Length: 247
Ligand code: BGC
Image (cartoon, rainbow, N blue to C red; front, top):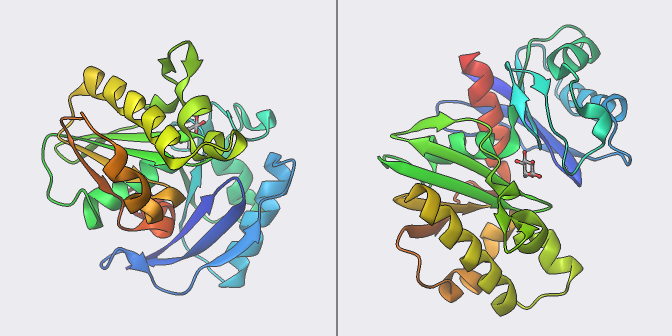
C-alpha cells in the first residue's frame, strides 16, 4: 500500500508517496524551499506544490516541528512562525489539498515511528528514545514499540538553558563549536535524559546522523546503547505516511 508523506522542515518541505510494506519512498522525493516567514498560509502552498507534483489523490501524512494534538491541531511552534499555534492544520492543509484526508504528526515522532518499524529501533523492546538534532532537538519515546507522543525533550532545562539552545546542530553552527565541544554538550544532555528515563537505546537522528562517526566516538559515560538513525533524511516522510495509514 502507498500513502503520501510530507516532512515540513526548517529549510525544506519534502514529500513522496511511501511504500508502507518496504518502509521506503516509492518515488524519488520532491522538495520546495520552506518559505520565510513560514506562516501557515505560505507553508500550505508549499505542501500543495509537493503533493501536486505527484498528482496524488489519497490520504496524506504530514510532519510538523511542534506539538500536535488530536491528530491535527498545532500547539507549539518553537522554531517556526508563531501564527501556527492553535491552527487546525488538518483543516487548513486538507482544504488546500482539495479535500484530501490529512494526518499531522510531530516531526520527531514521525521519524521515531519509522526507525522503530524499519530502522535502528526494529525489534527492540523496553524504552527506546530517538532524538533528532537539527534546528531544535526533537524526541520520540517508545515503550515496547509503542510511542508516547509529543514528549518535547529538547526543551528540558540543562544548566540554566533550554537544552536545544545548547546542543542542537544549529547551536553547533551558530557558535562554531568543534565536534569535541558539541559532543560534550550532547553527552551532558544524554546523561540528563538517561537519568530521567533509563532507556535501553538512544537513536540519534536528524541530518547529523550521517556524520555519526565524527561525534558518537566522543560520547562516553552513557549506559544506554547509542546508534545513528538508519532512514536518515527520509524517516519523517515514511513515519508521516505510516501515521496517516493508521488514522
Ligand atoms: C520542537 C519539537 C520538534 C523539534 C525538532 C523543537 O523545538 O518543539 O516539537 O520535534 O524542535 O524539530
